[in-house]
Length: 494
Image (cartoon, rainbow, N blue to C red; front, side):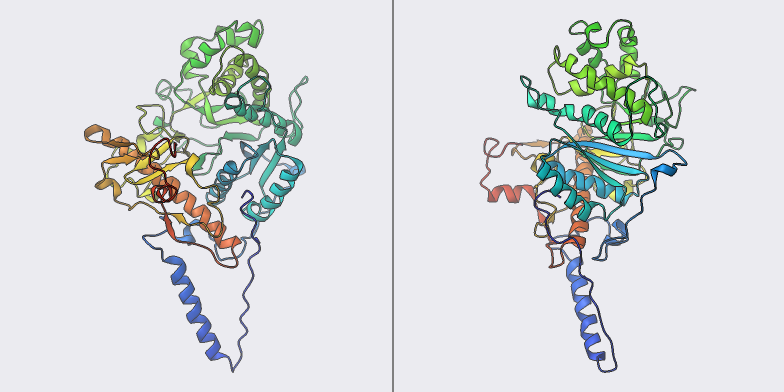
């Protein structure tokens, strides 16, 4: 992705002509092929991913995989999954987006996957469309781009706060321009029954999003509702599902900082929400799952309420609080999950860490968690085990190029003998006793994310580097930072 990824995306097909007098030539060719295969598989220190290339991509043969055909939306027989995420027009979001699309390809996500991009110039749009056609559409033709104006730059307000406004305004723009929604009278289109899954770009999919949670364990759901008889296992109109972020009723307190009626209007159901309901019914975060009709109704009010909330509450959480306020206003009572996501390694409850309850020294053996890990790994924090550190802000923006090295992966048994984390600011933290579980979680996050990045980068190199690529799995944050002269937090802060 991004401006670095400009190499020819069409791999050249090798042609071998055989005749009676060319047996010796064939033998030499076979030997050369074997040598290339051995060179590709070998790495300097250890394997480049925890899965073989055949496991991660059935089409990883050096040529573009066959594209999956789009279905004509004019002959819609059933609802479809619509996975969508919002980004700005930036290089850092390019590699995250490529990784997300690749994971959707890897897990065979049904339906459509769309990146909403806000704030590109016309020139940037054309370049991004070209790159998308060459590098993303080869995975699946149902992977899309949707461009919107910039909604996050508001005069007189902090960009660090308002940059997140692109999400509600961008999704609203997408639903109006792609699906024809308008908030006038009966809000309805032929896409009403589609299931919208709104996620963040820094989420590493662990399995496909499906509208069926009947086989998920009870611990998937918030502890206050998991034993109720009225749990539902499919999203439908009026029955949305979302992940908790453990901010409980903070969204309600933020809306009440001023006169809440000025935000939601007189007579709004949001005015009568209890602190308990605010916590267990409306305290929602991504992944959000709603029908398209419900999502449009919600984002319409989300975009409307967000600037008003920001008048009294200034903070990055205002964007999420706006979602909760809109849901309460519409009385869209969410079934809140705790098990859709992991992110915070030290959190006591509220995330899906149950699958690691009995994991110790083998926390880096990520393949074993394929069927038990939550839907997404949300890599929005910093993670470290020993001398292996990862922060999304420190991932090289040119990671998806032919020449860049792959990540050096930790040994699979690293958690069996390591008792500390070394962070990018050169601080360290040691663990013992009951706190070792935090290190095991760090280990899972580091190994999962680095492995995911290596798989995506390998796929890129396999399909877009006809003149050869660097498959050496030797990139380590501290080794590279040392080369750049970073010695203290003031030199290279995280």
